[in-house]
Image (cartoon, rainbow, N blue to C red; front, side, top):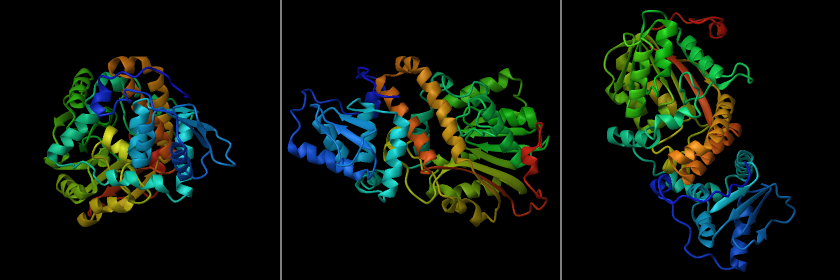
Length: 429
């Protein structure tokens, strides 16, 4: 991507983020203390081949390094902000244009993640954790506010860079890495349906349905009836319009309500991309919801971003992009299943599939960046560029995982002998 010198827009999303404006007057020449602080920051990222250029043009490097990336810090207060809380403030300063990067953004973040892990986290791995521990609560009211922050910013924005057919804002499945995004998202939908072994006439409840693509797909291709719950008004409005246009109103119902208020009993429970917004303190409650809504011989699947071991969401992502988010470890997820006696039948990690999905999204985002800028402002463009690029790096370096967990009720015994049904040609399993 390289350096971008676009003029910042002071109104709009930048203000909504609460970004501090640049200082009214330029910083003075960098002092010996400024240069020492910059070296401390470079030392903190271990062996990463990074140089830092200060506001007066002074370049700071470490002995023996051959820099592949150059971070430009445009004012003294930005340097101090990096030192105070690097995890959160790097994102804010980058979004505000007070930090610029020379070099590919994805590769830079990937290199930084790898270097920090080898260094055991270092000084940059700790301060942001303080904010990460102050995750916004996912109460009924808190969840609505958190989801509104991210998902109700406009369907037209998401339509610019998601797949055109189903508007899937979750990991695609690439049996062949050369597939288009549209083909890979359709492959993901089949993959989920085959894991659940859907049969015509069955009933399905979906918790957190996005723009409703999976529900419509299950109804059209697998002959099931679906009730899908979501608390994003924009998404539910879009989903209902699409179901009406596709003649699926008799098979698909979209309910504008929280998953905790699911009513009825169903053959199948499914949730794709919602668990990240639930929070571990609510996992037992989610298990209670599943137990009362899924028949004892039913099947369920949860698809979620996850972690190798328990850790909070990146502080900047949690504050600016996904408030209330927490990607769980598999151990944390067991709080959903074990207390209810559910049997976990299959676990698949699609981590690299998500890295490739995000690459498609970022490329499409960049192709429409002018339209995005007109919708919002330059701070929004830079923030979402960083979010998408950082997410690619996180999946590539195994900072994040993508789990699909298939489970059954305690009375389900007719299980497949192999995974052959997942790869069968055709539609329904």
